Length: 168
Image (cartoon, rainbow, N blue to C red; front, top):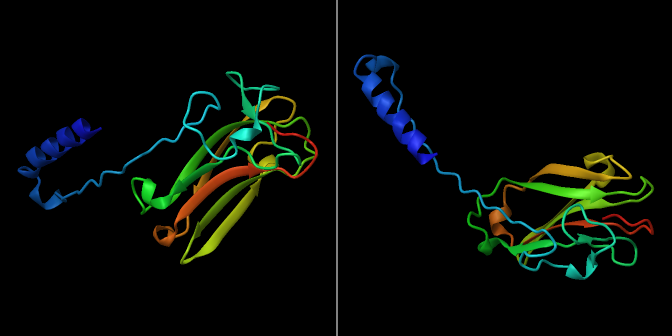
């Protein structure tokens, strides 16, 4: 990516000699991307690892089984200072979900807290994010973060299911 930008800048500088009135200086801000990955097997432990189950798995051997017995899925939980850039505007979630039926109340939860921060809590229905039942369905969702997230202390992202019908 950086190489492409250097080539583009060099071409623009060369064209500047021929078209000086059309030239505009461009500043490319490097956007850091960080990937947090969890396959329920070989990754670093996340919160709520006790929900791991061998009953169903999209790939590998495990998934996070949630129901009224264990309502919270494995949880992405990080202090904001541990993230590379506290000027975050959004996070993108990709997950696989197995819903045996639509008769549950599973939600994706974004929970942001801090000692001097008013709690930010938002939820989205899993049925709205992935209506597929009886097989594995992909969940792709952009979580827009509050403008004042730099003041927060901790971010958590997880699924919650308080119904008796399990979701994986």
